[in-house]
Length: 435
Image (cartoon, rainbow, N blue to C red; front, side, top):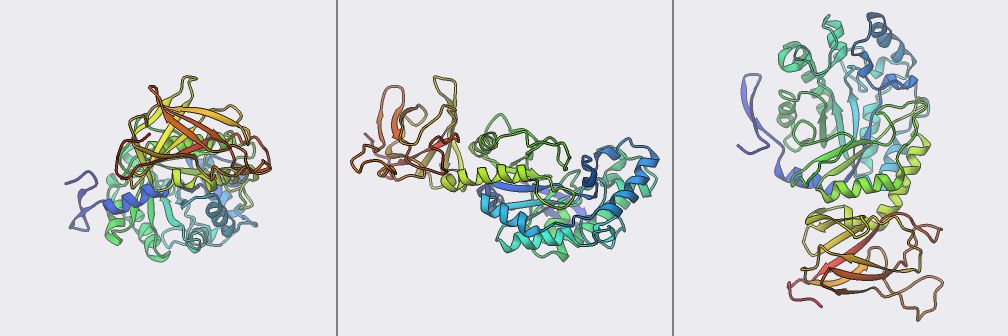
């Protein structure tokens, strides 16, 4: 039995499941996804679901009555989310169809605690899935097996990840979750990804039984939150991170990361073989907070120039090196093995038209065919004489590959572009000795 397989019994029938290796390999190509945390409790800026743990009886009752009756995102347009994700280079999304509170953001027959019985009264999950599917993006649903509403209705104290509240030890909760999961899988067209935030056994098998092509992310692969593994993971994985300080919208929440910091996070994750699932927090009126949209568009501009270095790549044998100045250079490789990409995180200004030198130590023994800054032709510099020397030069030294390059590309108006630059290194197809 391989690392992805599990042996369980569902409804008395033996079943062996697991993500297919082909689906996991395709997932590794996707690189960048949009996480959307949204539930009825966003209207006042509460963290999603978790405040119910340890809350008084009055608060729990008030939560069930107040938030659905006030949830009314009058400006919600799922097309705006899908358009943004598509424009900035995101290839898939994952939406909180049901978070731990048990409030269902979809049309369900299992409980009245759902968006159809809120003041809004419309199926948010369907709106998201259909909008993203129209853009050709992969559709993903987050589903929590830890259902605080079910616990409340069954007079069980609300706890988080305690033996008394997990489906495996509560047959009633297990069946309740299975019914909801079947609704999501049967009523919303093809779902590509399912993210279980809680014990998945007995539920992920239900997914594979319904459709073996559905990929289970959390519950079947590493999905670290707000961090990146120390080393390369040579398998499918994704890191789930927030732009701001919490998963749900908060009125005082600032986007406390810059676009450059988010890009450096994406670069490190890709160099280590993973995907970045970056969270946005819909505001009470249903719109994307402006500062979050601005950061994503900045990332999108960089990705427009540097797509080949991020998508359909794998970790290289040397994922990272440190320069003499203490700055990191990350590497990815194209799946065909013909091209390496070196991400320069040097924060010093690199002016358009300026020639700079870079020493790349890791590729010294590689059979190099050509070297160029990604996104430019290395021949033409706007507003420069036709005979201006802008050619990229490189040579092997005892210490590494010494690259001399003029930045000709111009992603935006400023002559100073403070985002990471990428060097593309093409290798000789015959593996022969290079200059």
